[in-house]
Image 1 (cartoon, protein in one colour):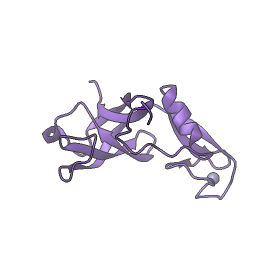
Image 2 (cartoon, helix red, strand yellow):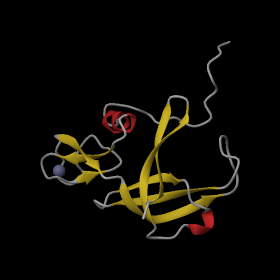
Image 3 (cartoon, rainbow, N blue to C red):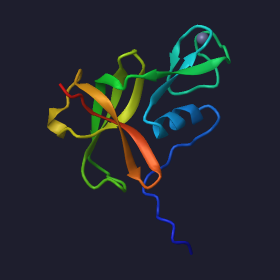
Length: 138
Ligand code: ZN
């Protein structure tokens, strides 16, 4: 037996293609993969540009601001660590790139398409920080 804490969440798979993203999260940056040949922004990260097939990839540091493009509320079944309904949204970043994340700091009945949001880097379990989104300060 070990005294290691039991992980409640499914942790992200970090590999060669995604390491830059999670290194950014650890540094408080929301990094979006960018093709260095044609400048296309790519998310989720890919081993090659889906537009020009280039393997020459870097990243862009996003502002972390965006809007709710769409969302759902998970009510049932709730799996650990969730004990209350929670919202997951497609966030459209200011650059047009979309990503999926949990919405926080907003009552479920106050979420709407177009809601301005910004990223928050929240340690949801010891050693696991996720980029979550909440209402943008006015
Ligand atoms: Zn490209």
